[in-house]
Length: 442
Image (cartoon, rainbow, N blue to C red; front, side, top):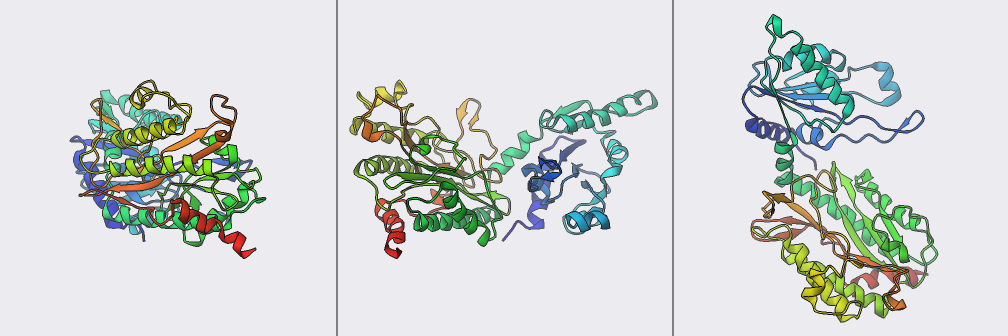
């Protein structure tokens, strides 16, 4: 299950059809990143580069040239090298870029200065995103300046730079049927990992040991890495939104908040569940949990075509604020509490984000200062939460140190929505049935 060469080609054609006449688009591959000394982090291709090509290697540059007689899709990449391949793995080489990835033309990356300069010369406009990579920015400007230096001999340098992401990121916002199929599978794998963790959790295990249950399930099903550093926060650690140390021992009576998703064929899933370490929610934990669950359900109901982006956040916010008031953590009229943002000590983030090749995927949330209207093919996360800081003396001590978030991945369909991560339980009884299993086995 992956994206076909035909779909990559369709994407390139769609992008080039939107480009101005007599233009060229230039995209560099992601650079390799050093982890320590002479060891690199596992390589992950730049999402824009991958979206248009599926080409997985570093040290590559792509040029899209609408109307070019000898081919519109040009790739510069590393040559085949027997010695380097023995040490570091196989390379496609220019021949493979054509045969396997559909390039019309491909050249060694070592020849890029001469050849790409020639491809830029005579073009009126360059689509390139200045500011993302300072080193490559300098390289692009060197190519353009070398053309400018030859103006007296008849060279024709480009006169305008345009942001490629303005076109490309809007395309990425709308997922095709093939993309949704891959994302559904990513959601299924991540859901299975959450179920595995609920069955495995017990007092005395460390957060990183629970994290290992997720990684095992991801990789067992072909998702070679998490989509982001997993958050495994037991007890008060759940109140730290981006807690990734995952180093503390889990205690009986605490909840553990796990925000973990996998990357499958470069597409992300993003799920959060909160469940009891010892198998059962306490009365107070369950009371707060039910508020968050009701908020998420109300928010998901607002995910549909024609509804604006902020609607599901507003729905969640109303339910959360009402719940905080009903439980005595806030006092006053719900409308006034929302207007004055009295809820912010307990709910300080938005209710979701776009999801796709990046876990916080590209795409504008506002268009002309108005919230974007949801359309079929868009995928969002819906993730309300409540976090009662352990040192918050404004509330009764029984609430302190409880952090809860519930998150699912939701695709907008023609007549409503589709929850891609529906397989993982989130109702109290269903969660407790899983978290109690380890005690039954003991």
